[in-house]
Image 1 (tube, rainbow, N blue to C red):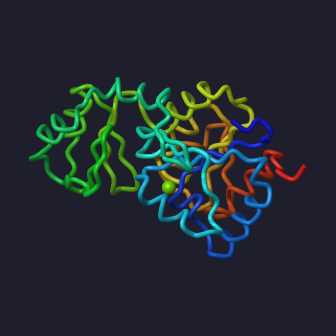
Image 2 (tube, rainbow, N blue to C red):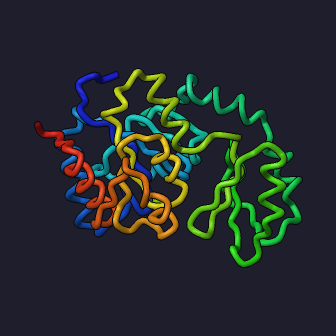
Image 3 (tube, rainbow, N blue to C red):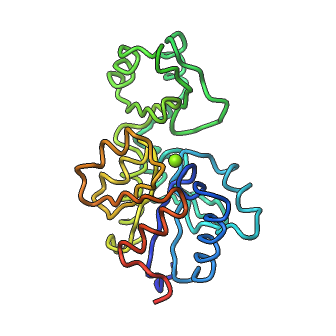
Length: 245
Ligand SMILES: [Mg+2]
């Protein structure tokens, strides 16, 4: 691992690293590329690896060093997409091959629609807020899983205790990173666990109201007034994280 970095940016993609105007994104990406050797870049996202591979086909897009994908359940090297066994096996063990069991259990629950993505250590649904029953959520937690609702659209059944934040902490530990260098950034409720790590975090200006409500009392989270990529950059400046110095 490159030990000369001065910043570890652990950022969500949609609405965060991919948020803001095209110009704001282009300027921020160029800044990061200029000082790329000082930066350890981690994508922490609900997206799968195929989506990220497509982004990286753009030569101006910063290729991440690591990817924590599938809401904390997939952990791979950014260039090779090889799993990081030290972290991913830990998730695998907690999950215990539960996909089929969960799909059966939730097959007839109102307001749920299975997402057309293949996931190995979680099960992802779309949900309709007006139809979702509290008893469905209860069923999931009673069976020993976590249930994450996000953006009024996504319902994820997760291995218990696993989400973006705990996986990031496990990653930091396994790589012997200095936690003070690690800055998470996000925009929706599924990023809350990143901020609950206690790391110095950035909520971007377009953060959803439900997240904004939660971070109001969290002193370790800076809420930028700028959207997406511009919000991350603003947050980094707020924390005195200048790559060029
Ligand atoms: Mg997002």
